[in-house]
Amino acid sequence: MRDTFWRVVRVPIAANEKYLTDKSLNESNVKQFQIQLDDGMGRSAYVCKKLDCLQLAQKKNRLGRSLRTSIPAAIFDILKSRL
Image (tube, rainbow, N blue to C red; front, side, top):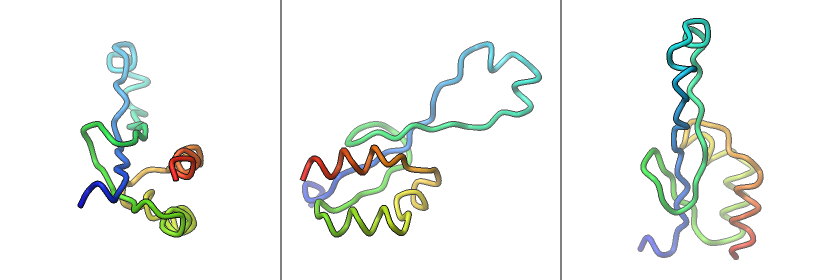
C-alpha cells in the first residue's frame, strides 16, 4: 500500500553548540526544519504518485499544514520529476 505514495518528512536541523550556549541567541530560539523525501525520522506525510495530487497538495498547501512548516517549491519539482 505505501508503495503507491511518496513520503515527505520534516526533520529538525541540529543547532551548533554556540547557538545553544549563547544566551542572546537562545532567547530567540526558533526551531528550524528541513524537508526530506522517503526516509528520516520525524513528522511525515504521504502524497500519492499522481500529478493531480501533487498540484492539489501544492496549491492548497496540504503538505505544509500537515508537516506544520513551509514546503519549498523545489520539493514539488523533485516529486514532479519522479513522475
